[in-house]
Image 1 (cartoon, each protein chain N blue to C red):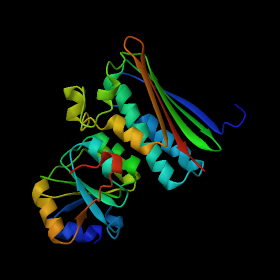
Image 2: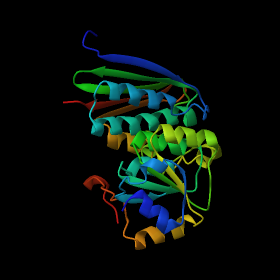
Image 3: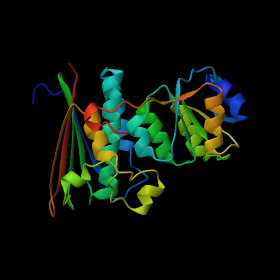
Image 4: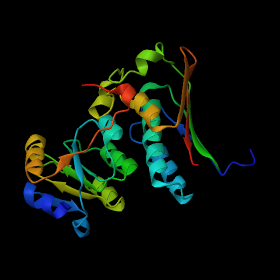
Amino acid sequence: MSNTLLHAEYPVEAEDYTCAGEASADIKRKLKQLGVSANVLRRVAVASYEVELNLVIHSDGGVLSLEVTPDRVRLISKDRGPGIPDLDLAMREGWSTASETARSLGFGAGMGLPNMKRNADEFDIKSKVGEGTTIQMGFLLT
Amino acid sequence: MNIQDMVNVLHAKVLCGQERLETKVYTACCSDLMSDVLAFVNEKTVLITGLTNAHVLRTADMLDLKCLVFARGKIPGDDLLEQADEQGLVVITTPATAFTACGLLYEAGLRGVPIEWPESEARL
């Protein structure tokens, strides 16, 4: 698209807790350089970190994409599975299927998806068991 | 209250950011659950925690936090402290437990971060 100001893709590996958060830190740095306001920057950073952690904790690996146009920041997380059997349950605060490893690091409180939804201006999640999950979030700049 | 006041109240040791002790602190949050911290905390808040891994720093980075307080005398590794310094964080450690640290700071006038729930999610 001709009006895309910035596009970046970050592969995120399953259970790679050491690197978890690096993509989000880079996304935040890039958006700051673009002059995105502090309020939007913070909301994108929180949602991005949550979705990146979800890829590490729950998925078989995937890609986190960033796209910036003059009117919005868009984050897209697309994984290779395993998919979420019950989306309503997954969206419920406090519900989590995170591993002990994730919990020992301070995650898996069941706040991730609700927190993404709360911080984003637009939120959409689609999931199919055996195929994977795609989460799209939009943050308005105007 | 500024960070120096917190250091005095908590009999804390400054691990990094000595030159930033005049930074003002407005509210506090105490949690080992970074998911909760990501959900509720803003940049004017100090985080009191017993967790000393890299994700505490990443969480602080995402939220632009200015100060971390490690309870129970915990001290993170040098690599984490270097990273914290690069992030512009002040990191202090107090011998007090998280509960006592919160009590001392509350007594000194610091209050919890206000949680604003959307009406649709209102609860008791």
